[in-house]
Image (cartoon, rainbow, N blue to C red; front, side, top):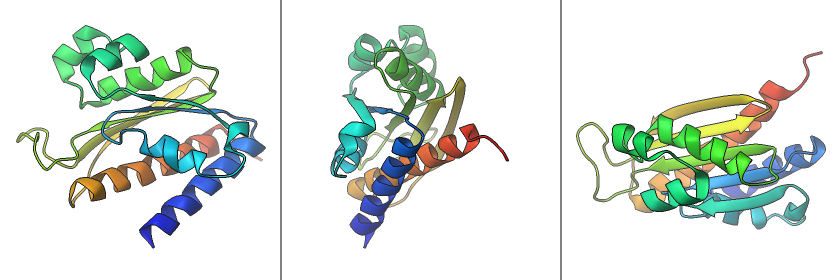
Amino acid sequence: MRTDTLAKLAALAGARLKTGAARLVTAESCTGGWVAQAVTAVAGSSDWFERGFVTYSNDAKHELLGVREDTLARFGAVSEETAREMARGALERSKGTIALAITGIAGPTGGTPSKPVGMVCFAWAHDGQLRSETRRFTGDREGVRRQAVIRALQGVLEALDEAAPQG
């Protein structure tokens, strides 16, 4: 059922992106390209999916997305500050019109008291707006990553709603 939920959410996001003539670009760390995989599993995704960046290392975040070394040093890879720079960088380095970024600690190791396993930071950039948030998910590594993919796609829908003209 969880996979079905993910597939439905990816299809819904795709339909909304296509209707709005928007093109999605992803910047993923802890999900390792899972969002890109989920959306490209939707037939016709070439109409609305521009590209995906998998930037697992700090070097990749810096080199491919322009995340500042100072940001990584001051706040760490798992931070809203880094997620925001990832989203901005993904838009700047693509022909996308909406970006999502994910960085987190999927576990089972790597957590600290201030950044526990299951902590995931997100950012969405669209129409000059940049929004970020931090969530804490429970479960094993796959469960944390799956929940992060679902939340990322939900955030795309929310960003599209925020940008929609109010009537």
